[in-house]
Length: 620
Image (cartoon, rainbow, N blue to C red):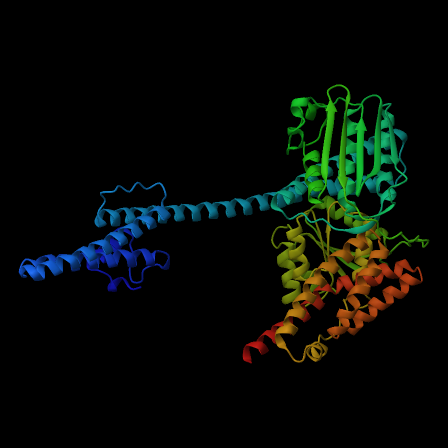
């Protein structure tokens, strides 16, 4: 609706009060149309009155009837305008004696207030988004700044533990390692809290061995309890299956938090860890004879940063995050976490989960050999001297030839002159950071050398960004030296490159759906979504050495690879299944890593073919 088509008075009001020029906004167009009609009716009424002065009595009677009809119609329009005002602002008071001009004034006021409210809402939204980005950046920086020194402390203490030490030196070293583990636990709690609040925490469902999951936790804390003269007992009921399906990592985290608290707050008596079956649910119970919790604190104890009183942190340490995170994790798994406690008597925490029975775990009798990097050229790009020294020490022991660079620019200059088999890339560095350096290596130097992000930044978004840029792996500090060496070995081939010569084709898809481009597009999108999910599952299974899950996943993926002409990858899947049947689990792990290393190459090829299919659909 053009403003030029409106009544002159209304046109002037819109320009004056709402600063509208040209076209009336769509959201107020119906209201403006009603007001315009009212102005027109007003003009018609005024003309009728003027003409009536000169008409005969008979004509005047007829015109009076017409005027009455017009007045009724005008009143109806006024009522409609009043309803519109009430919709915009329900608090607006409209009196019975308000004529059409007063109603129009009220409408203009309501529109002005509505516009101001929307502007304030947009400002609040922008501020919230800005605050979210600031918080995200803060967590990334905090993670990096704390993990960097922890990595040096943990790594160097590990190297020191391999040397000849006196008993008192060993005692001091144990204290250092214990402190670094405690500090790492605090950092992980803070990151977990952030993920839970942002809704980016995911729960997985995989098979796991219950006793292998719980017994190591109880052994570790059992030793700590013994030092205090406290007995820790584990009782798993016979009717609880040993093989369950759920999220073992998160279940272990919850049990670890509860048993850790029980050990921390119990100075005499005993701690009972009991697992039993209740209907369809598996119940985990941790009961202690510790200091207990007063009744008025039972509800608030599960809130973030909450502890019973301020002296708890000073006496026992901790952040007050463990129980809050545990409760959130239990609820995400559709369970409940219960607490009964009495001050000075003790506490009992119970969480109940529905965990279906899983497949029996096959026994792996193979011995894991030591991976070495003899004569492999590894470039470490790191600006922290302690972390650089640690990485050099670890890799030299594996037989690697080491090159170093204190920032991304030095690394690029070196890569122009020296062939490298693998690059360990820190992310936060002066001059040129790890992300920018990776882009230059891939785009300007056109090198496919495997790059591993070796960083203290533990945010999932940062990991995804690195992998999308073409990095082959993402390892957070502090890291396990053996895992680092294995990761490098998995990415390096004799020529120092990752091989993938397959070409995606939609020929079989078109044949299957009768040359229907929309169906091919839909099937391709489904493949990409499932492929990403399966790769995440493969990565988790590799880390937990869950060969049963690996074999099951690759068996499920194999037909879809053939459907997209990814025959080499499908053949690799078959090799994994064959190796699994032969109990050759080292080969299962190695071949599964090959699929994982080619994940983004395969996904990019399918996406490129999918883009062509979109273009084809557009042209038809």
